[in-house]
Structures are given as C-alpha cells and as structure tokens.
Image (cartoon, rainbow, N blue to C red):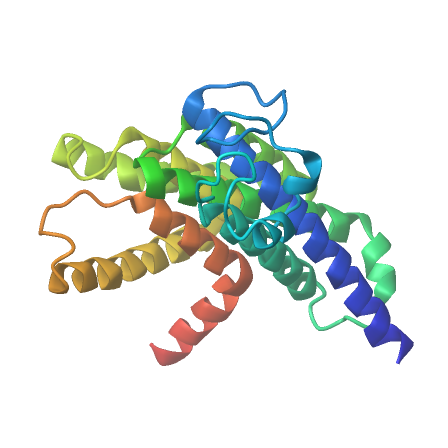
Length: 268
C-alpha cells in the first residue's frame, strides 16, 4: 500500500512541475516570437498589462478567470492551458515509462543514469512542444531552439553512454534526409529549419530512432493532410507545418520507438 502511494505522490509532483515548465514554455514561445527578453513580468498579449502572480497559476488561473484576462476581459488563448497540461502529462509519462516496470524499486530514483535519462527526456519533450506550437502558429522552426538543443542532447546522450560516432552519423542522416529534399525542391517542399530539426532528431534519438520518428511523422502528416484536403480545408500543394508532425514523431519514438520497431520486424 505504501509503495503505490509513494509512486502516486512522485507522479503528482512531477505533473505539477510539468505544469510550471509548460507555463514557462508559453512565455518562451511568445517572447521568441516578439524577439523580447525572457526577463520581466508576464503580460497580457491583448492589453499589454502585467499579469499578477495569482492570475498566472498554470491551468488554475485560466479556469478561475473563465479564459479571460482580468484587466481587459479579452479571451485567453487555449494554447496556454493546453501546453501546460500537455507538458505535465508528458513529464509524468516520461517518469513512469523510465521505471521500466520496476516501479516498486524506488532506489532507481537515486541512480545517476536514471536521473540523467529523466532530465534528458524532460528537456527533449519541452523542446518538441516549443517546436510544435511555434511551427503550428507561425510556420517556422527557429535555429535558436534546434541548434542549442542539439548540442544539449548530444551531451546528455554521451553521458548516458551513447557512442559519439553513432550519434553524429544519426544526426547527419537526419539532417541529410531533409537537405536532399530541400535541394531537389529548391526550397519549395521544406525550409532550412527542417534540416536543423532533422539534425536535432538524429542527435536525440540515434539510429534507428531517427528513421522511426521520420516515418511516424510522415505517416501522421499524410493522414491529416489528406483528411484536410478531403474536407476542403487544404489544397494540393498547400504549405504544411512539417515541424508539427516531426515533433510528434519524436515524442512517440521517445516512448514507444523500440516497441514499434519490434512490432514491424515481427510482421516482416
């Protein structure tokens, strides 16, 4: 009884931590878009007035304020609670998944490798959420996110025992996959940001994880793209925010990449 209760307490704290990080990611996304410093108090994008701390509580303030700014009464974007909840849920999934069915062995929490893997996964999830939202809203993948994140993920993976050569090759494969498309299409199919994102994916997931993530992303993108065309929301040749699907592919691969590969090889 004590052990499941302890696990529940840990996951609750992880979820709350994820909500806080999600709130920070919302701020980061907006400040990057406006080219503003991260320093300074949060403010309403509509009326520019500062937001009091009690109106800046993740998810809770949105519910209390009924989705409207206290100062100007204009609607608050659903992006804010959605990002906060997504971050909290994905952080909980990362911790739970990394217990590897050893949830009753809590000594693993104090293991250095385990802690590094959790921090790595938290970081990668946060980066993918930023890429997802930014590309969804503004059809742009920022180098200021992908390039530093690639370096951080390389360091994390080296600490976790990954081969430097293997990671570099995976990064090159990921970047080259999109670079070739960029050259063939003369930049019409994809942008330069996708190339750097491919590099980040390779450095983060290694081989064959980067290939798995790309396949998943293109599959999801194809299904959604064809659905939007069928519904008349998009036309053939319309611009698609590829980073949205690639970030989803990365997170799916992070959790279930090995399972998907095993399932695939069993079929074929």
